[in-house]
Amino acid sequence: MAERETAREIVLPESGFWNGVARLFDFSGSLDRATIESIRARYRNPPPIPSTEEAIRATWESVGDSMRWAIGEFEKELGEKEHE
Image (cartoon, rainbow, N blue to C red; front, side, top):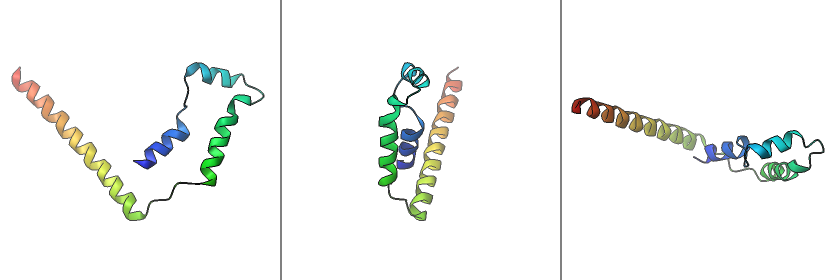
């Protein structure tokens, strides 16, 4: 779960569309100072790397969550067909 949040922080923008457009025309880079500093701070104090066991457990938990969701969707769809 922590890996997803970290990836989301790095990849997804914190602001909306118009702020992105403004950054395109910010040739001096003044709007990106806070972003650059937050990235530098993350690299100075990186989050702890999970052990192999924790990573495998987290992966299988994710697989289990996906399976439970898929089974629930299948049962829901099956129940709707029975009522028709």
